[in-house]
Length: 311
Image (cartoon, rainbow, N blue to C red; front, side, top):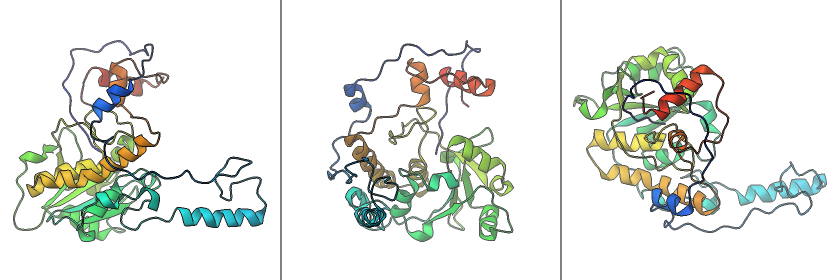
């Protein structure tokens, strides 16, 4: 989950209204995601379905007798055994795109993951963890983090070498931060949607102890199979890749960490997934086909997106 900036606009404009939608052509999609389509992926067969109810052979099949349901469930489980390294089913394993050996970095990442992200199929944190040594990428799942329940995290937040990646008026650009040489740097990154990340950051006093930093970058997200608020919002994996590249002063880190994400998006696009443009892009080009929100606060946020105002 990450963030980008924008330039302020002169004065408010009327509420954006949906225009006749124009779907982007396949050639436009290919141009904005150049490189993703050419990545090699393994073709796989569709999971077997029940011939009568057309559902996957699980216990949710409503027609098969109980004995056949149990047999189908076993068959389904065998077909979807997950690979330990990338946490993906064998047919869509991304291990060939992971580094042969974990990256050697001095920075330790603490990923604060919202519980809702844990169940998402296309989440990026498992790929990030697979690229780094276990002791350099620690994942904590939850909404509330008190000092009593998380004494290690409290110690980390009080460490002067700890930074937390969250944009805002009080945040310093990471490129401008001078890292001390006395102890290895630590970076805390919140994994979740924007509303989830905001809730975690402001309702946990521990996360306001470290120095707050943000990324000043104009790169567009390659995580095109999930909708982002603006064109410069990045996924958790992309944020970590950019941050580690800056902190470790090693440009190859970003390329190495982004490779499995590119392969993931390539596979999804080649098997029916659609490119998700940012909400900002859809609004500006008259492609936003959902009803406009009635909530004034949400409507105001959409106006700011259209006017390139940082939110």
